[in-house]
Image 1 (cartoon, helix red, strand yellow):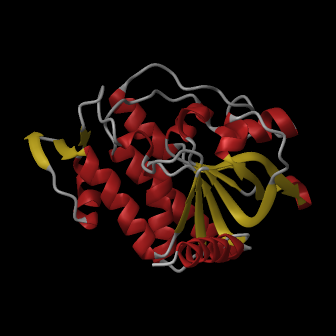
Image 2 (cartoon, helix red, strand yellow; image 1 turned 180 degrees about the horizontal axis):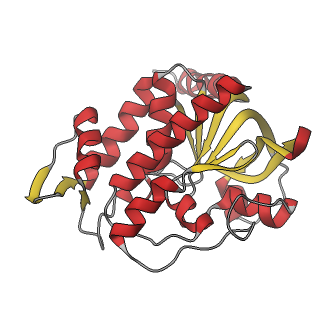
Length: 259
């Protein structure tokens, strides 16, 4: 085996994928449970979708389960989605189903890629592109190690018809819109409200309700939706995350049809 041929194969294949992702229908920021689920359902409908994840690992907070016990819980609605993905669950008691966090994360990753979505890890979003009618229409990307090393390296940009903020508790894209651009979010305050303390039942309900277009061209999903609208965190129960991702995909498809 020739080392140079190996290097060329990796470089050419990656650059081809990255070039193709410079213009997409939907760009998702964050490859946690909501982002992966959204990408899966979008790709299934042949919507050109790319996920950008700043970390090396894909799956967000799934891997650690609850306090590093790699088990998570879903409710009945979440179980039905896990059944669709072929992920095993065990009933703990009525309405509570336990699944293996490793199987959940790895299967979501695999199914999303197989559905046709592209996932780029170790890429951070530095900024957003705002165009006509103050609409989010793209992302400004850089390698995550660049920011970690505090290097001054100019980023590159991609164009997207819609962006999904699935960055978790930090709701990074909403924060860019609100704090850097000065945009008014469609939240009660016009800004990021900030998530409230843990209340699993209410948090699971609200995360799906708050999955919506929070700013023109920007959909918020998962814990980013909870943080943006001020609903409670819910801890290691993940049904709401999956339902939020699916709703984000459905909303994105509806908005794309309107454009």
